[in-house]
Structure formats: structure tokens, C-alpha cells
Length: 402
Image (cartoon, rainbow, N blue to C red):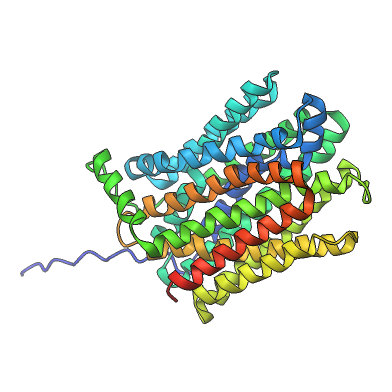
């Protein structure tokens, strides 16, 4: 009897009905908490940091910019590491290193060294945003990746929210260092849950042969592609504006005519729940309406929210913040997921480049927004953010395909 060989079955990814699909999404949600809680934990207590360390508003915001700058610098190296050891292994290593560095930040007495440690912590944290979308593209069936990417982004909003609202009340009672330390502990627990929940990868193919020059060629290929550049531009401009609003709105609301306390202004970050909702909704809408339409609509919503923060009526400011958050996270969910879907070669490098520009926008524009706020006030700051978002929308309208 002749034996016939059975052709290898091509891996297509976990379907939405599978247990592994749900485990991946829950695991990445935990990783999002571990990453973004640490990354942004000082943001809600910047006025306390400013007073404690005797630095200006824009200098205190360097705690955020330093970490996001480190993250931007780390995403491409993490993509190189992940091509060799696997996306899941690299993300695990990233979270362990970040937790250790987060504890070092709390113990460091000098502001300059704190900034240096925040850069290192950000670089360590870069492993998750650099690799999560690529991991989804490899492990989830293509029919479900837009929804999965939106769900992942919604998980990152929970992380960002928890980092801010957990740190603020502890910091108000015990000092900013204890507030940040409490978030490091929370992040360690979330990281452990990620490691336990994430199933063994099936879609990863190890690449041990590609030299650094080959990786750089892939990077150059993406940077020469106008369709990829427009997505990177979305990350840079929209994230830069979004971080600017959240960095400095608390400073504005703690002054006249609002005169709110640190504990009250920390509740502003509950607006992140709107982003948790909108990022997933944007992914669902994109499957019906096309990514470009949803991206442009999300940017328009973001601009409307920014302009609402110009009013001097507190409920109006709060509504504006919620609307801004809905629009931003909808746009981010589309742009980040589109980057991974659009890349035909070097997908890991493509998504890492998106995150590089995204966090460069956070670092550079978040700091420059503070300079504008310090010297020209809130109105100039809000108008600058609206202009950045409008530029992103115009770029997407002229360049991105449906």
C-alpha cells in the first residue's frame, strides 16, 4: 500500500469563537494595564510633582515625555528582538524589565536621574505596543483582526485610566512617590496575569538570519511608502495633541475660575472609559464602512472635543474632554490596526514604526504643548491641538485609501 503525504495545513489564526481568541484578548488587556498604567501614572499628579520637586509645569511633564521618548526609541529594537525570540517572549521580557525600572524611579531622589530612569522604563515598556498588533495579526484570523485590534486598544485605555486614578489618591495622602509605587505593584500583578493567560503562539516564524541591514531595508521600505507615512503621521499628530490636553488640563482646572483640588482633577481621567468604548466601536464600524471613513469621522469628533474645552463652564469642559477622548481612541484604533494590515513585508517593523511616531508625538508635542501653555495659556494650547488634528485629517483625506 502506498502512503500519501498529507499537505501541511496553513495556519490561519484563531477564530472569534475559540477559547484561545478570548484568552489572547484578555491577556493583552492585562498587558495593556501593566504597560500604560506605569507609563502614565505621573500624569494625573503632575501639579504635585511640580510643587514637590520645585519645577515648572512643562518640566514636570518631562516625566511623561521622557518615558514616551524612551518607548519611541525602544520599539524598533524590540521588533528585532521579537523576530528572534518570538512576540510573546519579548513582551514578557519587556514587562519584567519595566517593573524593575519602575521601582527604581520611586527610590531615586534626584529629578535628573528620575528622568533618565523614566527613559529606560519607557524603552522597556516599548515591547508591548511595538509587538501587540503584530502578535494579533499572527495569532488571530484575518477576518477578526480589526475588531481584535480595537479591543486591544480599549484595554490600553483601561491601563492608562487605572495608572492615573490609582496614583492620584495615594499621592494626595502620602506623596507622589507612593502614588507611583502603588501603580508599579498593580502593573506587576497585571503582568503576571498576562504571562499566565496568553496561549502558546502558533503563527510566529522565527527569523534568525536577517541581519541588521535587512531590517533597516524593511524600515526604509515603509518610510518610502506614502500610504504608511500617512498612518505614522496620524500617530504623531493625534497622540501629540491628545497628551497635551491631558498633561495640562489639570493645571488649568486647579486655577481660577475652577479652583479644583488634585483629587478632583484626577477624576478627569475617567473620561478614558469613553475611549475604551470608542476604540472597539471604531474597529466594528471599520468592517462595515471602511477604515478611512471611520478615521476621518473620529478626527472630526476629536477636534470638536478640543474646541469644547475652551469654555469656562466646567460641565462644558468635561463634555469636551469626553468627546475628545472618544475621537482620539477611535482614530488610534483604526490607524494602528491599519498599519499591521497594510504591511505586506516587515510587519513587525511597520507596526514598530507606527509606535515610534506615536510616542515621538507624545514626547515632542506633549512637551511643546507645555511651552505654549506656560507662555500663552489654555486657549492657544487648545487651538494648537485642534490645528494638529486638522492637519492629520487633511493628510488622511488626501493620501489614505479606503
